[in-house]
Image: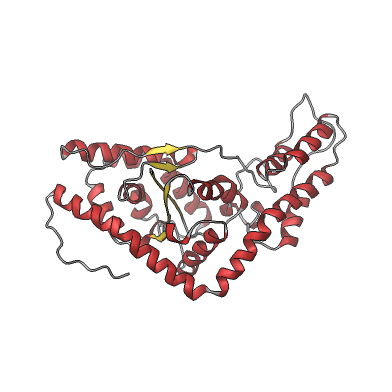
Length: 339
């Protein structure tokens, strides 16, 4: 079976944009591929953060992923596998300054820090983390990486690094990872449908997957729409976003019926919002039940994560041993895994 690798930062609550855009697909991929899903806490350190919150969010993200259907044995915590950072250093010596300078996310996140923080400090980690991202992928010889278009540039850097490494050392060692594009819905903020659903915009701009049902319904009821019949056949961004949420919730019959009503100019947006809210609640209720079960066994879940990370670390250690030999570094002897 081919190897899949994908990662997520532990930045708090999963929202429906995360679920429909990535996690739902990750669950399905487990039936077709060997899958590894990393919680990349090192990456979360590149932006301003609180240590206690990071630690809490890391374990909570693992619980939330498992509640959605990700298998515990497929999950690892990045910082429990230090070989990632060692490979990052080695790969940084095969990466040009110019390549990193062209990364658009560095520019975007630097701007975000400047706009939202009193401190204008930009860490070197924010500049170099695409190399760590490449190490996350290459250390497991991933064949495919599920990505959205916004991450395609980083995956291309991983491919460039793997090609350069192989060419310079005259050995076809690293796999050249390919993107695995899924049909990713473009879900927008209900409060401002000109912007993507995102936690960085503030609480009103996303719907938490595990959030309170009353709050979920209130957010949907308050969603920005428009007034009157469609103009020149163009659907407003807000209404289109509600229909998109209904579509990705696999409510085809409701979607078709409401779309016909809309085209006839008879749709009441309150009816559309009620159906969308019901669909989202139906999706999240079984996840909440599973999450509550996992939370009640939190200590056992943490132990599972330690064990899965230790098992997955064996693959990383094998890669590092081979990379050290290829790059002229001394071979580590009698290394015992301690996680």
